[in-house]
Amino acid sequence: MLIASNRGPDCLADPGMPITASRVREAGQPERASRALLPAPSVTEEPPVFLQSESPWWRAQRSEAPEIPREFGSGSRVESLWLRAAGLQPGCRLVSVSSADGGVGRSTLTAAVGGVLALAVPGPVVAVDANLRAWGGLEHRVPRRSAATVWDAVCAGDALTRPPVVERFTQLGPTGLRVLVGESVMTSQRRPPSWPELFGVVGHLRSVYTLALLDLSPAAVAPVWRALAWATVPVLVSRATVDSLQHTMRLLAHMKAVGLHETVDRAVVVVMAAAPSVAREVRAVQQLAGQAAAHLVRVPYDPALARPQALDPRSVSKAARSALVEVAAAIVDRCPAELDPPDAADEAATDGGRES
Picture 1 (spheres, rainbow, N blue to C red):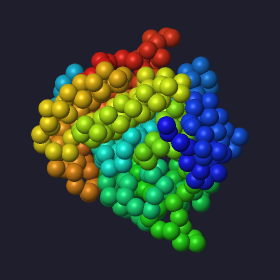
Picture 2 (cartoon, one colour):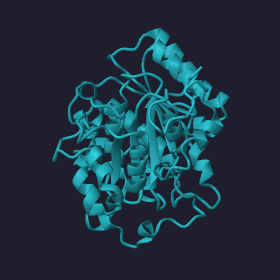
Picture 3 (cartoon, rainbow, N blue to C red):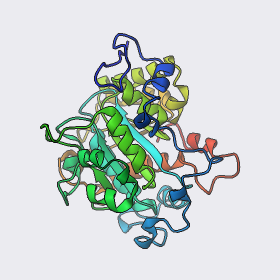
Picture 4 (tube, helix red, strand yellow):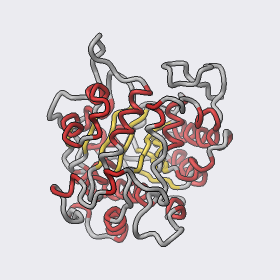
């Protein structure tokens, strides 16, 4: 049974109580910082005034729909990704990346898929290190142009709603992905943020960016479950091992058991290969996982994905690029777009096959 952590004021009050759907939805809601991460407005609601502007701040940098880089070829899946990405409806959609276990490649996937989305989506895309740890995370996956971290964003407060301010705090990936890296210093002046502080930062970022990806810790505490439940697209990462795949299936089963059926239905499961070859028993478990998940994508082993260095999805192998495009397409398919016919936005979340 999954038990809620008692770490921080934004976690469930009683650490001995099991996580349920109502507790995941309700815990922490009165706090302003937690409310900032509520789901993006539906297509029938008016978007924030900033997002209603006919000329968003980023139009000066990218006035036309982006072209498909030659490295990605001209396949139908690539073309449909770029076409749908160009028609995303106003409002920042949230992509929450988590897992059942640690060390499965969440940060690698966040940086790689975020890099693809930054190429395809006309507006700016941001990835946030939401591990709340003083080590690891996205800082090894993006070139540093400044020493700024998520802690600087916390200290900026409401000023984060101004693009020039938040842009000073983000690092810039090779494809234009903005990255808010984690804080690696723990002193009286600097530290990793708490969950309420992190959620407040993300709430402000969603008034500036077109798409936001959260690189979360494993789904073992209530705030991570809430971030998955509130996301437009929850992404669960698994290693290509029997144990990791089984743990991911158990996580999906637990989420269904507490009533988070819609979260499971929206979820994209990504299996990251840790070696060039995959054992037969692992492939058999992958087949079962494909039946349990709404959409499952396998990412083959690639040395560029295994190295802790700045990641450019254009430089990986063709097979890995195709898999990353499939993950990015699965994410965009679940986001409302102008291409959707009336009353069909909800159907977009179930488009595509059950397994690729």
